[in-house]
Image 1: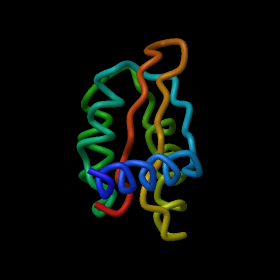
Image 2: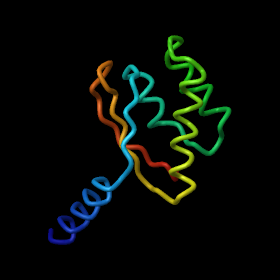
Image 3: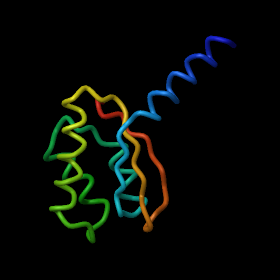
Length: 96
């Protein structure tokens, strides 16, 4: 049980120091971001953009660029907050 507590605390510490992205978007967009790998830009843009027709392509591109920049730095985790539209909080594995 001590090992589980230690690993849980390490994860919380890592998340506490992770970048936070505030994205004014609906739950569907946030869900698609968490499920889609940053590995292929075109697929990511298509899937995330397809989650909501109301989301401008430039907005999707900006999100992708910001998250990819963190990934390139070696950042493992990011926290997404849906802002006023959602208030949903998600954790994203940037290295997936």
